[in-house]
Amino acid sequence: MDFTPEELAFRDSVRKMAEKHVAPIAAEIDENDRFPAELIPIYGDMGLLQLWVPEAYGGPGANLTMVCMAREEISRHSEACGLLAGETTMFVLPLIHFGTEAQKQKWLPLVAEGRTLTAIALSEPGAGSDVSAIRTRAVRDGDHYVVNGQKQWCSFGSVADHILVFAKTSEAGGVDNISPFIVDVKNMPGVSFGKKERKMGLRGAVNVPVYLDNVRVPAENMLGEEGRGFRAAMRALDLNRPAIAAASVGLAQGALDVALAYARDRKQFKRPIAEFQGIQFMLADMAMQIEAARCLLYECTRAGDRAQWDRLPLLASMAKCFASDMAMKVTTDAVQILGGYGYVKDYPVERMMRDAKLNQIFEGTNQIQRVVIARELLRNAARAH
Image 1 (cartoon, helix red, strand yellow):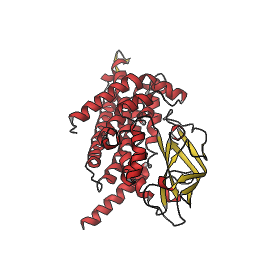
Image 2 (tube, one colour):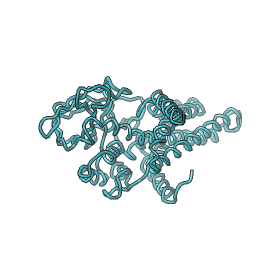
Image 3 (cartoon, helix red, strand yellow):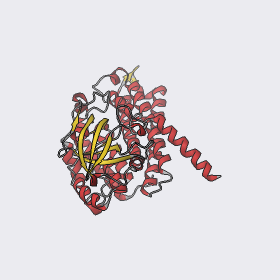
Image 4 (spheres, helix red, strand yellow):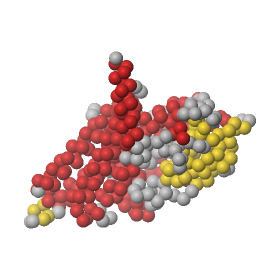
């Protein structure tokens, strides 16, 4: 992994910030399931919320590698806080790739200020992996669309200023009738939220149902051509899945750090347990798995930074799937090394294990990632012949 001096300096600054501002509150926000609003100005001033916004619109103009560096470093202490780095990704990327210049001029400078939170509303109670099954509808009415429906699992939805809502704009089948709409949460009547989901892990990262009741959205708030929104979603997911891999790598590294320190200090049979070969083998396997995932992750980010769109879907799914499976294994092993202490909340590894599970599920389940990987392999093989 050959990083530029700029990238290394950025990583160091994020690491210091996380040690100062995130580590001290990580356990508390998990215990109370509290959204860490105090981090918003800190992240915003560092450009972490708005990483993807190009310099031309007042943003940091970060690349995928830097986004993943930020996620990795913060997630070593708290993945719930790590997800706030690049929090606007799934709003900004479709806007960059599929928005008009007028749309970019309207919203990107606002996000670049570092105080705006955004969300994406794609999944529904009956539509998760199968995006084509969404039932939310947007019906044209003059110079507006009227949007009705319900969304599920909306990350940071109830604290967001703008939500990118995906809705069907016709009765055509498949995904050729889906469009994304920018919904101004605070100024468009008809948007409401259900109770915050009571999750096993990633407590402090808000997930809510979103209800859309005759929400009138200006037609100019639709991104891209009508019915072409699925492409926007897939491109954004391809660029966001590596960030989930990065959070997984950071989470696993944090768990290894705790396990190493504990193994060196904990004594049984008159010597540190780190001197027992059984523990050493576990630590060695954990370190190997983390480093392998990290290498795959940053190979993927380089493909994204170089706009190698033909390689990105395969590498993004590989990185997300491998790293999240790895994090589940490593955090579980960290709990095992700490024994009974690993199972209590006085140590962070039980929280890390709970957090790791969701990474195998959201942004496309790991079963779906394997489907994508196999499809890309077969497609590439067919092209070669």
